Amino acid sequence: MNVKHALGLAAVAIALVGLVASGAAVGGVAGQDGPPATPAAYYGQVTLTDGGDPVDGVTVEAVVDGEVRDSIETDADGSFGGSGAFDEKLTVEGPVDGDVTFRVADADAGTAAWESGANEEVALELDEAPDSGTDDGDGGDNADGTGPGEGADDDPDDPVGDDGGDGGDNTDGTDPGEGVDDDPVGGDGGDGGDGGGTGPAGGSGGSGGDGGADTPDAPGDAPTDEPSVEDVVQIPEGATAVASEAATVQASPDGASSSVAFAGETGVEGIEFGGAVEGDVGVVELASAPESTGRAPGAGVSVVEITVPEDARNTPATIRTRISADRLEETGADAEDLRLSRHSEGEWRALETSVVDRDGGDVTLAAETPGFSVFAVSAVSDPEASITVDSDAVETGESVTLSGVGSSDEYGEIVAYDWNVAGETAAGSVTETTFSEPGEYDVELTVTNDAGETDSTTATVAVESAGTAAAAPVEEPGLFSPTTLGAVVGALALALLVVAAVRRADR
Image (cartoon, rainbow, N blue to C red; front, side, top):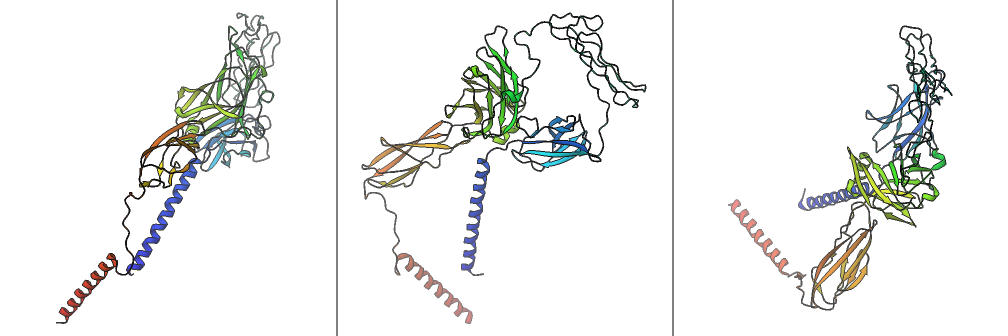
């Protein structure tokens, strides 16, 4: 291989290395800037392989790498969850490499691929029905507490009897032997039902039901019936619901304030109102921000719509919301950088947010809001401004390019570049200017990110009078340039040495 060929191959290798490095950098940026994964949701039915009979009353578990991510019970026809926005589902946070395994009664009943934001129906099958031996149904209610509820044995031939059902509620708790009314709020319930089974191990009787309340609920008592989610929650047009729940507002003992607590179906734990509020409150967690609001500033973590009674829409309140460790890891955010924002009057408005609790890797945030609509939790940080000057030697009257494209933001994007050059202002990531007098000039750049956070930096530009800047030496072209002459002399000297060596060898 001659020298020219080797140099050519080296140049090609260097070019390929540069292309691979640039491609890796672009891929890294693309991976970093992509949106965080949203949970996948599953619903369906569990049936027996032989005959297709439904399997009711069993727990379906979603398992990833041996870890149970979520669980749900089947109903009378073996179904679990549903396709509707308000239906309960099995949800699996991601990203997940590989499949989700569905386990029923310690047996694998099927698998499904994980896909961000999926809402998939799955058909699960068991080779044989799970063992019975669970408690039978509750006994009937006793309107006056005069008799126990009886639990039925679903298999009289099984020597191991099932437990009897719970006794029925009594509403007055006054009958002897069925519960004494020693609490003015309500009496104790009646006796439990008898256990079934013909063998020596008959089931035990069920526990007595609680008596009904004799007096109205006191302020702050939990409601006996949760409100219907469908009647309370509102889903923004074009949005996709991931989870939802509803609860009734409870007044404080003095009636001056009120609060509502949720069961954990969504990230919102509870709301404390600054005044008296009556009615139901709904929360729906969305897969992404609705089209009507656009995405929140920074790196998105969660989006919810909170629906309150009409007369409470502008009531000040404090919202507590929980962010899981998995979600934080997906977003790559620090807990201290999380902020709750509310969409109001056509724009996202930042709320004063603080971390009030930590449980393992999970964090709970509290934020004060003047009213209710769509809320988003996102990660926000200050941007970092940077200035680049295209020339180290600047003369008067010469155009100079100033660039701010090296500025950066950890979570969001920079939306404004504002320049101040010798008292003159300009806008844009790149600007050009000239200086009429020699001297040193300070150039200031202020950048603003999509969350409204700013950062400023300065650079000094030294300007000299025209014609005084040191010129770079220019090599004279031509046959008799110093470089050419030196090469010729060197070649002649080498040739003479070769001739001399050959002559010595011939002797």
